[in-house]
Length: 253
Image (cartoon, rainbow, N blue to C red; front, side, top):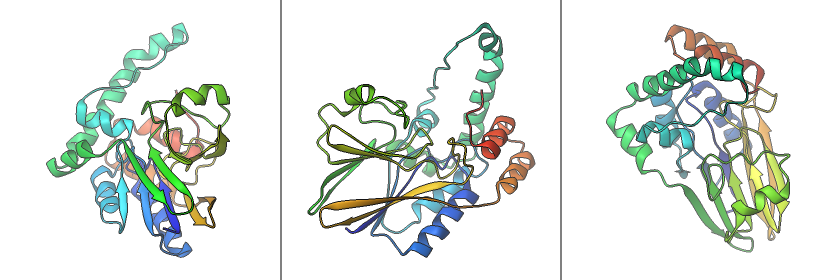
């Protein structure tokens, strides 16, 4: 193993995924591709996106929290921080549930079984480098939010007992590369719905040589408005907030 490509949080955005894969091909074929969950929910091509990912050579995928919601029927809990947020809660809950229902309706039974069987983590031993572990959000919680500016002290509990030199994860939709207690943490960002202020999809290239790992976060341009148009065409139930997120790459409440 000399080169590993890592992407996550595609969220059914097939056009963004194709732009990422075209850029990856231009960099030279990697030895392996790891996809760190949240594969199909929110954007208008859930089944097509899953098929494209599964067809990649030397690919391994894991299950993210939204993949888990789709196959278990469980849903995330929205935090309520004000009376205004409480008043908006019925609308938010209805939109959220409609989004997941719409996505499930467009997946085949085979798609559903594939998502349900995905593992929560990937692991690999890199000669002369050490163990690499990949999860969706953290080794202990697929909904944890390990943002780039989170203090080390809040990260440490998630690393307890982890035997790895390198931890790869997604979920926050924000790239990160830092070291905590001797473990390097790399977040590849999002290949479908960035949330760091840059609407361009992101992915990571990891090059291993001489016991070291060089990490490159790549950003690629694509036609955001074509995704917006498709959301409208299919009358996606969450198209309003997905559109705002696609255009501004910022969380929408």
